[in-house]
Image (cartoon, rainbow, N blue to C red):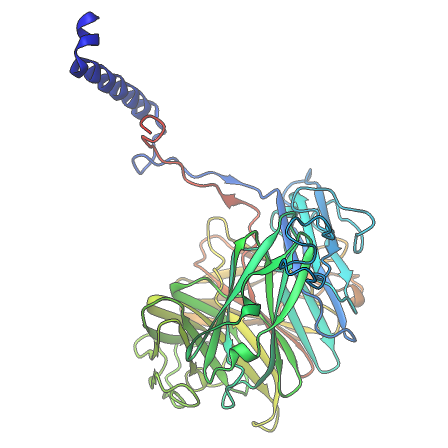
Length: 544
């Protein structure tokens, strides 16, 4: 022992020997998996979730928020309720918020994701069991609606707000609070493209901690910002709106990122058009080298793809469409028109894609008219650097120059195995027609659609198949599913979508119509289980 104490090298050797022994024991008892050092990932059902729908854009229209969480087991219980998110008061003290930096005077109508509902603030009634449609009338509401869910009602939950006006229909998915949200759409100053009169970003902080948000706007000429778009402070349970029309005067497209430095916010974007109609622009996927944008509706009118390269390097983008027959076979006419000078004419097929060059920290637009040729389809975007992308589709009547409506769609993850196999269309209001635009880019797909009434009554399930590499339209008047027997048309109903065993990935979007009104909403998976993080063997616990 004396030798060990006096000889530092011997002491070091003993320590190394002990560490080696401990590490050897850890290796011996580690879980045996296919990949050395990686445990099998587990799954868990979400226990809390929070969504926010913005205030309806038309106070005189019929608006409603609907939510649905499927029943997984007989004993499922939980809670689902909604409260308003009031606007932030005027900043009178220069502290960047309604009540100064301490938040002492904040109107906290939020219960966060773990509290209990305040009976005095409830909108509608609280739902305690899954499998039934929850809804609340938001007609005339001047504030966003925060939808809270806990227990079994938090797993597989989907919620959306539909507004039916005399001149159109709009649908917006209730947004999850996030630290980063992206949108892509044509610019406000593009007279040759979609003509926008006003662009408004809606922000809400439904949580119990303060949030600070900033907007990054990438135009065809580069970044655009102002003091008003930086450091937007929202106390718990507050909301605000920001008009970015002047910042979005781009001859091509714009990419808008809402990001937070503290807290999280739920973000939505409203586009008001010169022709008089209004549409919500769905958020698109974060920057990536590949995107699939489903749900481009068929029919007359122009189709515009907007791509933003938010990084410091230019992007070389390749674009092709997936239609009913997989490709278009059409010449790429129109590429290079109206701010599209960076587009290279092509057929828009996998073998002959359109090519688009996007400057760094900027946006560009390309026409998909010839590639889609009036057919419904999906758009595949591939780039050498991460980009964001979205599509705007105009709807025309007998006069091809008369724009009746505009619909927006965006990149979303697909329905796929093993966990993301379920999706939900929260509501199908009376007088509207639903069509699904379904794209199977890789393998054959079989999908089951099950209508569910407001009281949980299930209608007849209907199956459809989509061949690999094609797009199919499913549903509509006299086709697809029907409302469950006994359903009051005024109550509407939901539709549950289930990917059947053996299917490849499926990209989907709902096209909602009401007369000339048109709305597109990309369908996101609503998993009842989510994967837990993978645990790896590490020496961190042994050697700091």
